[in-house]
Length: 72
Image (cartoon, rainbow, N blue to C red; front, side, top):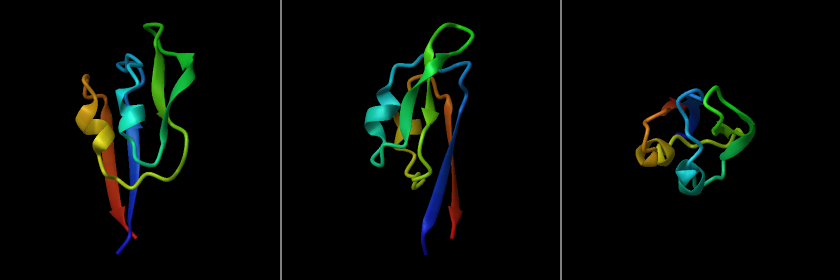
């Protein structure tokens, strides 16, 4: 059974450290060109290829990423 993943990032709490960008095996995450209320370029999902591995959430120092998985 295939797994489809999705991530939700709390963009207002994200500091744009980009640790999650390097941790994603499918390069789903990138830093936005936009900034949040604190002036940081926040992380965002740029592709729909998330496999739900949660690597990004595990390495996030601020815990702003939530990962959801669904069986297809």
